[in-house]
Amino acid sequence: MGYYKPVSGLASALASLVALSLLAGCGKPSDQSGAGAKPEKAAYTIGMSQCNLGEPWRVQMNADLKAAADQQTELKVIFKDAQNDTLKQRSHVEEFISAGVDLIIISPKEAAPLTEPVAKAVAAKIPVIVLDRALLGDQFTCFIGADNVKIGRAAGEWIKQKLGGKGKVVELKGLMTSIPGQDRHNGFRAGIAGSEVEVIFEADMKWLEPDARKEMESALSRFKEIDLVYAHNDPGAHGAYLAAKAAGREKGIMFVGIDALPHEGVAYVKQGILDASFQYPTGGAEAITTALKILKGETVPKKIVLGSRVFDKSNVDAGGKELN
Ligand code: FRU
Image 1 (cartoon, helix red, strand yellow):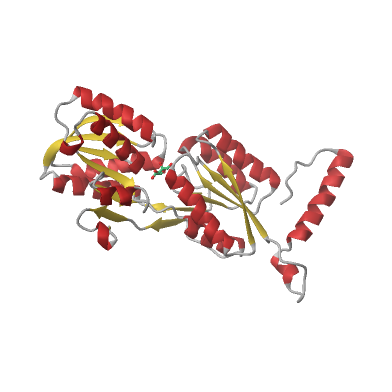
Image 2 (tube, rainbow, N blue to C red; image 1 turned 180 degrees about the vertical axis):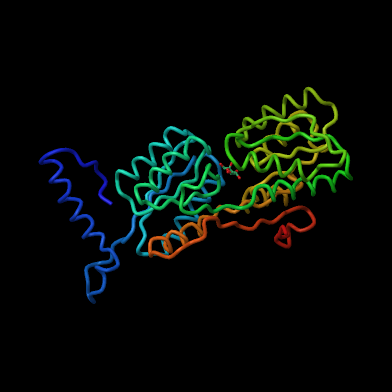
C-alpha cells in the first residue's frame, strides 16, 4: 500500500519502516476492533486504470465507481487515466503492482497488450477485476461486462425488422483490437444473416465520434443510397448523423448506436437523432461490490454478465425494453 519503490541498503530499510507504518495507519479490519479507535481510514486501496476519459461513457463509469466506493469507508480508490494509450495503461498496472495495492480494476483499451501485465499482477497475488473490455485467456480474477455478442445480435435483428429484411447499411466499428468491437460486429452479422440486409461500407472508427464522422463522409460520397448506419457506440452513431446532416441526407437514413447513457444515447433517441440505442451498462457499482467481496476473501464468479435494454421511439418514454 506504500506508494514508493523499495531501493537498496539503508534506503530500503527506511522504506520498509515507512511501509509498515503506512500499513498500520491503514488499519486492516483486524486492527479496527477497539472501540473509540482512531478515526477510520481506508482498509483497502484499489488501483483503477481507466482507458480514457475522453468519452462520456468512461466518465460515467468512473462516476459510478466513485459513487459506490464512497459508500464504503473501508475503500480508497486511486484513479488513473491512460488517455487512450496502451503503453500508458500497461505502466499503470506495473505501478499498481510495485505500489502493492490490494486490488486492481482495469477497463482496458485493447485485449492482447494488456493481458500480460494483468497476469503479472495476479501472479503477484493482487486480484484484478477486468471491466467492460475483456482480455485474452483467464489470468484475471473476475470479468464484469454485458454480453456484446448478444447486444450486436439484438441490434442486427432490430435493424432487419425495421428495414423489412432488406436494405443498405453502413457499419461503423469500434476498435477492432478490442473485444467489444469484435463481438458487436460478429453478433450483428449473425443477427442479419439470411436476410437481404447488405453492409455496403464498413470502417473501424475506433470508438471515436470524429473518426466516425469522417468515415461516414466517405460512405456518403461513395453511396447514393444508404438506409441505415449501425455504429458500435453512440458517439459513433452521432458522428455519422452529423456527417449526414451536413450533407443534407440525415432524414433518409436511420441511425443505431450502443451505450444508451441517459444523457447521451437515450437523449438522442428522445430527440429523434438516433432511431435506437442498446444499453451497455458501465458496471461501476458491480465492480465495487465484487471488489469488496474479493478483499474479504469471498469467492466470486469468474464472469459477471450484465443485462442490457433497447431504447427506441416505441419504448423510450417507458424506460426501454430488456433484451432477452
Ligand atoms: C468508451 C466505449 C463505449 C463502448 C465501450 C466498449 O470508450 O467506446 O462507448 O461501449 O467503450 O468497450
